[in-house]
Length: 510
Ligand SMILES: Cc1cc2nc3c(=O)[nH]c(=O)nc-3n(C[C@H](O)[C@H](O)[C@H](O)COP(=O)(O)OP(=O)(O)OC[C@H]3O[C@@H](n4cnc5c(N)ncnc54)[C@H](O)[C@@H]3O)c2cc1C
Image (tube, rainbow, N blue to C red; front, side, top):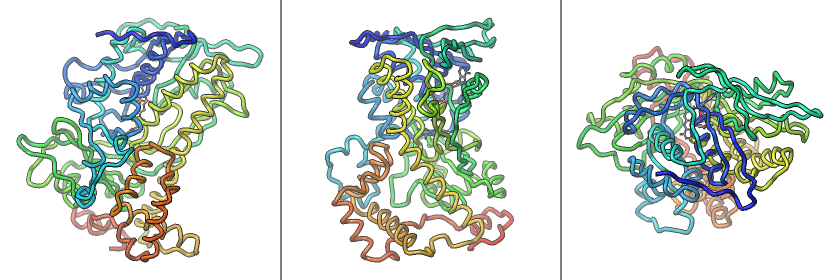
């Protein structure tokens, strides 16, 4: 089936080159095609193998996207954008086994028993499937859109430019010689969009042209490990319980990602300084032992309910990055835009990258449609990116910084939550009250979930009067009681080392 999109009413359509057919590249192509633009995507990797999602997961060579086999959570922001703009695509995901999980289904039993639907709950849902499934389905969908052409096995190696009056216009891309016997070539186009992900070469090319990209960068100081499993025939997923399937023990962050057709993955993230544990997590048997000692993960592995489908594997270089393509009110280049990870990225632990990437793609399509002048387009895109995505980036940075502090305190055997000023005491007491209230009060949890799903600016729910009153009530009942909500069920650092027979770390609170 081929889908054709009509030109936008103001008839301002362009030939657009997209670099990269990853998550954001695909959704940028969809957004641009819907506005009637002619899109050519160059992708360095090969096409997905014919067949089902398993074939793609186990066999697709995806060197250009190192995170391809790590599990992905697809949050409300992304899910609602897909539902709103590409409802047929959502149906395809479901046909491939992706599951829609609603707020009600995600609730722990105590809250689920009291659940009654409220307006807005219909937006608080996730799609559960492996990234390989998501990418293959969207790729096949995009391949059938008449005004999009995907050229695989083709690496973009440089920029074509035109410099005049101090302004740098991007006029196309250079294509390298690569697999498939392609000759090096040049491809002209009216607009170039960098969707080449976390290892984008564009900042380097722009710097060589005398247009350095200012970059904010902070290390999350973790290494991220994944192992995939499948439920054995006849086994069912454990039912949701009060024991969280994701959490932070200070020396270790963990999470389970249910997928489609019985597949699921577990992640264990280890702070950079935890060298002994980092080596242990790479060992497939020790990985399972760690999971079996964390109450929220145990039910997924105990009683031989599931079998491993991969060994543990890791990814480093977990950084938050924000790139500025406008400096002092001037764009570095015109007719050029960067979207998704090529422009900004956050710690994958929060599962925000695809959502912010798809939102970014949508913003770009709108900015191109609404503005004709090349300089205005650049400035407007930078402004809209700041307005919509900067609060999410800043919140992620704050979470990273407190995670780093916590990990360091646990490693050094220090007690972290002992405030030495009234301001710090208040901040801690407030945080504890929000956490405790969100475990017991549905309306507070709804607010927290709006932030979690990126459906409003982080923390906006705290402006709600009813939520404020509840949190105040929790604060009044005393910090000690609320602080219990901060505790994550799982062994202490020293206990886990003992359980695994690892050399006991020094200076640990036991
Ligand atoms: C470990 C890990 C776990 C994650 N988990 C989640 C999660 O749970 N939820 C979530 O929303 N996000 C998650 N993310 C983030 C998410 O993967 C990214 O935000 C998302 O893939 C960004 O999409 P993108 O299109 O910008 O880049 P990518 O998806 O990385 O795609 C870039 C594409 O460009 C191609 N390319 C690169 N260079 C060139 C070139 N020169 N020429 C041609 N093609 C090129 C690559 O081959 C690739 O196909 C995770 C990230 C990591 C690292």
